[in-house]
Length: 272
Ligand code: SAM
Image (cartoon, rainbow, N blue to C red; front, side, top):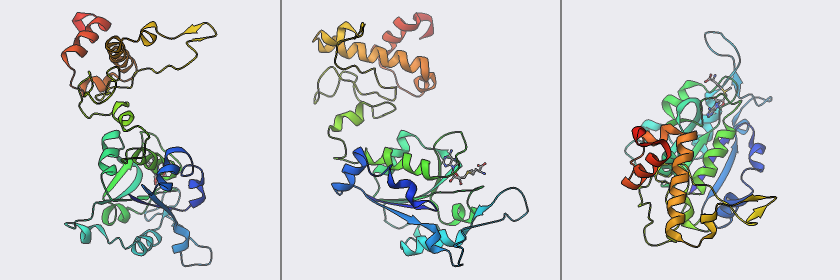
């Protein structure tokens, strides 16, 4: 996958792209990530990329010219000229006003060949970028950041780890929180029978050695060696945690009969 990031702070990405899974995915050639400095596309000697908003009001707005010119350099035409094309790509404008970036969107983006991430700053980006260039506006949450760079880093990280081969163990991305891909809680027969797909819930709790840390033990079942008991415990604790921290996810998830039984044990029969 090719990822282009348009920003006025290219150095911001020095850290986020240089560690762990993203670094390894880049080195393995799974992801090619380029960061483009929008100031390189400004024409005055101050390399101005912002201007006051028409109609008055607070703050400054990122000008359209540097963004359109950077896209031209990348050979990406305005949206209307791309519609109907066969390219598997998406131009994303980071925006607090965008649709919420969630795991399902990350999976959609990971299936593409190319994504372009445009980072806003100041009071935002001239709306013609959204109207004529971007395929979608994405928000990473209901809060206002100073710029789109953190959002772009979040998207790059989330998408990259979904690329085939990016994780050492492909099963781990299927088991993680929010992964809606329906899979039997009993597993699909290809992995250890004690692990279970999250099926849209939060992940189950994880423990590692030592089994006794300063008097804090690990749940007995996890050292029992009984894979079926472990699987049921993991599913139950995933349901408990989801109910406690993100009950909204339960409404969006199809619960198996076993899930409903486990939930009934947690909440009592009347709440199922
Ligand atoms: N005036 C805008 C508003 O109220 O919606 C906020 C602009 S914000 C200070 C500057 C830039 O940060 C935005 O153009 C966008 O690129 C980025 N940004 C802010 N919040 C974001 C969020 N929740 N998700 C993604 N990008 C965000």
